Length: 521
Image (spheres, rainbow, N blue to C red):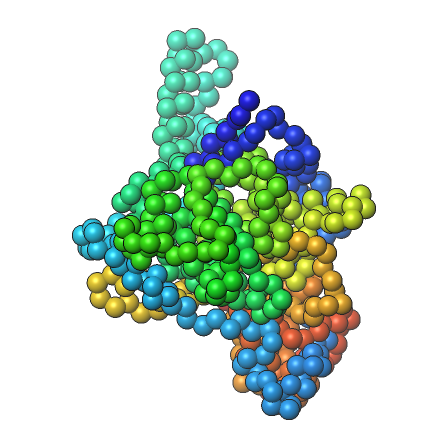
C-alpha cells in the first residue's frame, strides 16, 4: 500500500511501510531537546551529549597566531595579493544572468507593475520573518504560561476552593477566552503558504535575485576549495522558481547533465519551466543531455543519487521536527557528493539549519563508532569543524549568518545593490581529511580595523570562538595584511595555537589592548 506524507510546500512519497533503517529520523532523540524550547541549549546538550562541550559565554582572546607559510611565500613573490588570498570569497556583487533577467521580466510584464512591486515587498517581509511551526508540547507550554500570567494580572483563580460551580465555570470560560485572545497576539501562528500563479510571480520578483546570489556565493566557495568537483546531476528540493539550477549553471557552466526540480506547487513548477523557455511557454526549453524534470513528490527510494542536492528556504514549510528530520534524511540518502541547506539569516533560520546539521553529524558519528566502511559525511562549509556550533551555546542570541551583495530584479526605476543575510551548511560525503585541506578559521564578523592593529572574530577548527588581534610589529606585515583584508565569511590563512602568546598583544606605539575589543554585532 502506498502512503503519502503531505508537506505544505513539498511532498514526500513513501512506498510501503516505514523502515527505521531507511528513514532514521528517530535515531537521535536527543536532537529534539538540544534544539528544543523546553531547555536551555547547555542543559539540553549536557543531557544527550556524545562529547564534552565547554560553553563560551564570552569571546576567548586567541592564543598565538601565525600566517600560513605557503600563503606568505605567495605574498612575498607577488603571485598573490592580500586582498585576494586563498581564503577569500571571490564573489562581490552578484547580478542575475541576462537570459534569466529577461525571462523574469517577460513573466512579470503580464501583471500591473505597481501591484507586483507592492505585493512582492509584503510577501518578502512575511517570508523573512517566518518562523517554524510550534511543536504540540511547546504550544501546550505556551498556553499554560499565558494562562498563569493572566491569572496573576486579573487576580483570579477558577480553581480556588469555596467558589460556586456556576461561578467557577464562568471564570474558566472567561479565562480560556482571554488566553486564546492573548495567544493570537503573542504566539506565532504558522500556516502553510499556498502558491497560486500570482503568488509565484510575487515570489519571483521578491526572491529570485537574493536567493540566486546566496547560492552563487556558497557554490563559488565550494568550487574554489574543491576544484575537482563538477556536478553532473542535481536535485533541488523546494525548487521554487529554479534559483538553484541557475546558480549552479553560473558557477559550473555547461557541466550538469540532469536536473530534478521538486516543488509541490504545480504553478511554481510551471513558472520555473517558463523561465527555462525565456519567459515564453511556447518556446523550446533549454536542453540537457540527461533531461530536466519537474516533480511534486520526493520519492524515498535511494536508488537514484545526485552529485549535488539543494534545499533552499524550504525547512520553514515543513510543519514539525519529525517531518523535517525525515526530509533531511531522505535528501542525505540521495546525496552522492554535496548537500546544501540554506535558510534566511534569522535566529529561527539558523536554528533549523543547525537542527539538520547536528542530526546528520550524529548519524556520521554513529557510523564511525560502529566501524562502517563508508561513514556518512562531514561539514564542508561554513564550519571548519564537526562539533556543535559554539554560537548556539554562547548566550549572545546572535545567529551564525553571512552576507552577500546583489543587484535586485529591477521593477520600474533602477535599484541600487542590496544585501542579503543567510545561514547555511554544506555537508560532504566521506571523512574529513585533515592532512589534505588546510584547517583555517573562518571569519564570522567583519574585522575591526584600528590604526595599528586589526581584530578578527573567528570560528576555529577546534569548534571554538576566538578573538584574534594582529599587529605589524608583533606578527609580521604579511599576517597583518592578510587579516586586515579579509572579510566576513572568509577563511583566514593563519594557524592559532592553544597556548596564550604575549605577542598577540602589542604594548608599544599606542597599540595596547588591555581587554578584548568590543565589536558591535
